[in-house]
Amino acid sequence: MSAVLVGLAGHRNALMRRIVSVAKEFPASEVRFVTVRYDDPTELSARIRRLRDRPQAVLLTGRWHFDRVSRAGELAVPVATLPLRAENLYAALLTAERAAIDRVSIDTLDTAMVHEAYQELGLDDTEVRVMPYDERATRDAYLDFHLDAARSGAGLAATTFREVERALRAAGMPVVLLHATRATIRDGIREAISLGRGTRLAGQQVAMIGVQLPEPGDGLADDPGNYPFQEVRASVYRLLLEMCRASGALVLPRSDRLFLVTLTRAGLDALTDNLTSAPFVAACRAAHGLQLQVGIGLGPTAQIAARHAVEGIGHAVAASADAFVVSAAGTPQRLDAVAGFGIDRPPPRGLTILRRLVEARRGVTDSDGASVLTVGAEDVAEILAVSPRTALRTCRHLVDVGLAWPVPAVRAPQGGRPTQQFQLLAEKLG
Image (tube, rainbow, N blue to C red; front, side, top):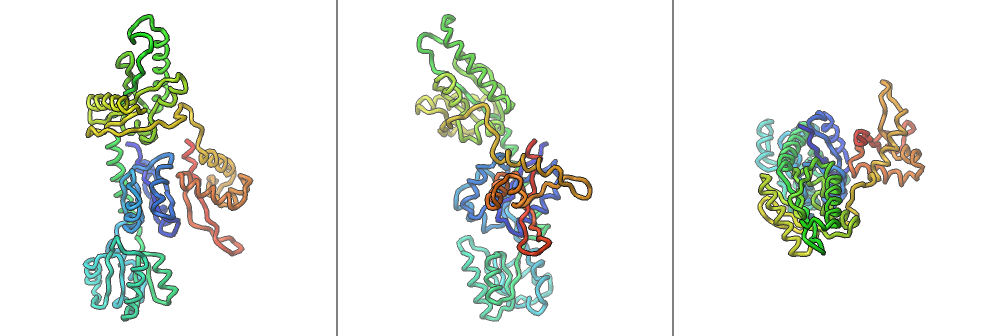
């Protein structure tokens, strides 16, 4: 079974670096990863849609991010989040002074979980204050909770929010960050892998695409003297074969005017750009000026999928639309063709840039003679002959489209601000 593709989504911070570090422990034969950086939860769905390879599941860093992403719109893939458990609290308390942990204010964790953890540690929890997670609460609400607890005698704050930690530290209050342990991260990644496998199995359902030619304007389709129509039919057949070859689809004539394309749901997503464009329509229109009707049918069997494909053609004809998709449950939905949907697509800008960077770094090796494919903005600026600011934007673009991973910053030997580094994913070049 091929590897599952999992998206690691979050801000570019220490937690994401830890997640990427743990992700590298998983064998490539089991799972591949793509990092999806976002600053605003409302951006995540759009960023995932722009990825060349869409992940089959996404791992978010916590429930707070999941709720904000969900409010912005449903993601097209299942989502796992890093769990919050007692071990997160244990790790935080181990970093605190013994005298302070009996008077603590704790956010996000469940009250019962906190009291159980204190009992297991043999600690008194009578002066422990807890504000459980509430999807309606803002970060300012959690900050106010800790400040109020400090005024009531709490000697330490434990928070899951880095912004709250910084504000409390600036206010002079002792604070520890409840961060995900490596064990917690492994569990979250395993959950994402499980969800991704389920998505892939769903993608194996049968799909059918019905492509119907318009009626000939000067005779019946089976008229042996209607040579212009027969030539156009043969040309459309070749066009379908050429476009479907990469998806592993089977193209068969069903009648003189109707072709049926058989493939899996995963192949359908690849061919139709995840059901955002109607296949063949623009290409055939450009080649012959014909208005095709396309019906896409899904179903657990080939017979049901074929019936839904034909129903989709009927909906397209009735609505004067390019295409309709009929789900496995029989629900029709209109699709609009994307102009320029063709056979040959130029390589994405990110791949072109990645190839230039990888070729330029081939001669840089470590002590073992292995190629070093880690670059900073200054390296990219020199290779591409652009300004450092443009180079940094280029690096972030490579990260956004899954062609590079951000790695921990490196402090320059002469001191100063650490330099952000990026790991080039040369395997994406094929």
